[in-house]
Amino acid sequence: DLQEETSGQFSGIGIEVTVQDNKLTIIAPIADTPAEKAHLKAGDIIVAIDGKPTREIGVYKAIEKLRGKKGTSVLLSILRKGWATPREFRITRANIALHSVETKALQPGLLYTKITSFKKSTSLELRKQLNLFTQQQPVEGIILDLRNNPGGLLEQAVDVVDIFLNQGIIVSTRGRQEDQNAIFSAHNNSKNTEYPLVVLINEGSASAAEIVAGAIQAHKRGILVGSKSFGKGSVQTIIPLPDDAGIRITTAKYYTPDDKSIQAVGITPDIIIPLQEESDEEKEESASSVQESALPHHLPREKTTEQQGQDNELTQKLEADNQLKAAYSVLSSLIFHTRQITRQQ
Image (cartoon, rainbow, N blue to C red; front, side, top):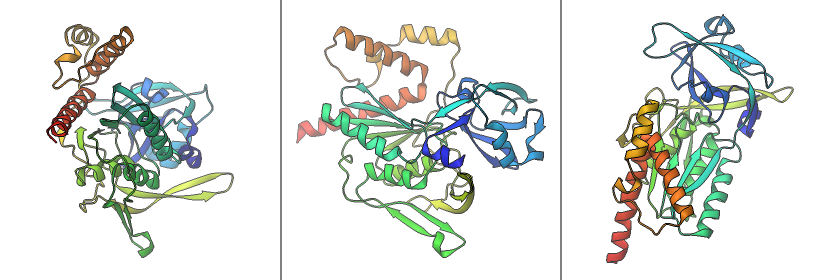
């Protein structure tokens, strides 16, 4: 099951979990899965599964109970910060296809890339998508969204950072044994080091996602926006078992290029923007009153009917997501500044 998960597909509800303070805790729901649609959140504690307390059945049995055939359901008892008592969620399982990278143009030259997890093909997918957009028009800036990314494969996190860095340490690992100590560095072959980069993180960004965010921040390659990350700074190794199964064990901890451990601490963004969840009435009001042109240093251009439709879609997206709106504003300002410097030269 673990091998299926990191290769990009499995059947279940779509969450990554860990044990925190002896409690089965959700790291993050995966995008477009039953868990996300049920509004489960990072930090939620799974108290019971189908009526059985998770403390009694243990983490591996709990994960096994969360998995199951498509169309079957599971009853979760969830305790969330601010709730006095647990609440029940009945969720129907589905096939979880982890399309880990999605890139789209928010404006000409301004890209939004969402990485939902780090599986075997993540860095390759990202390179292909960036190359495709680069062939169409010059890239002026990227928003890299790592929110609710529970992590995945260490080597994929390293490869993703390598896309944006030309030199320096990306991450180091330290374990109890000598062979668990390693240093991973960038190669001098990236063509994506010139344009501005803004990275979005939140409390659901963990493990491999924190490696990427920590390296970008330490090297001042980009600006981190959002809320503090989960703090899962452990290196995990999959030990193969019969019948294509496996067991994941913690073998070491990882450290950012500035020698900071993330375990139980997390990454603090450069610009802290807590996510605001508006009511339906507030969303309608803000969508009708705020225009894209009100954003600092918005990117001007002549608009066709199709482009006006895209602008309306962008405005709605930004108004529904204040963290993305902040990242867009920061990146637009950075692009504006870069253009000014280029003109002066």
